Image (cartoon, rainbow, N blue to C red; front, side, top):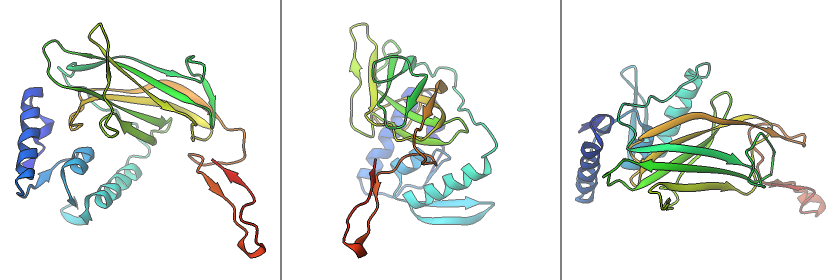
Length: 239
C-alpha cells in the first residue's frame, strides 16, 4: 500500500519509488496506490476507487473513475482559479523560455480558428542531474478550462539537446480547433516516466482566438451532414 509516496522527497527518492513500483508491478503483485495526482493514478493503476466523504463514489476502470472524479472537481471549483505550487528545489528541470507562434513564426496575439499554432519550450537541466527531460503543454481557456493537454512522454518524443546544454521542443498544431475566446498556455517539466512535475508555469502567453463562423462552444469538431432519405450523402463538411 502506497500513500502519496511521490509527493515527498527529492528527485533521487522519487526515482527510487518509481523504479520500485515498476518492478513490483512487473512481478505480478498487487499495489494499492493512494493519491490525489490523477495522472499518476492513471499511469500506475488498472482499477480505481473514489471515496467521497467516507463513501464509495465510484469503483471500476481507472479511466472512467478518474474522469468522473475530475468532472466532480471541476464543477466544485468552477468559480476558483487554481495554481499549482512550485516547491523549493524544483529547478531540476527548469523552464527557461516559452513562446507561442503563428504560421509566420511571430508571437501570437490573435489567431483564427483553423490556423496553425506552435508552442516552443526551452528547458535547463540542473548540473549532474541524470533525469531525461520531458515536457507537458496545455491549452487553457481563460476561465481555467483545460481544452487539451499532451506531453512528449505520451507521444514517445525526445526533447532536442542543444549545444549549450539546454533542451527544446515545439508542439505544432496544424489547424487549431479552438473556437473564439481568450486562452493561455500551461507548461510543466517532467521526466521520461512522467510521474513527477518538476517545474510548472501557468497562464503563460495569453492569446485570443477569432472565430469567423457562427459555430460556438469550445472547439470545432470535424463533421458532416447526411441526408440518407434523399440519397444525398453529404450537404456540408467542416473540420
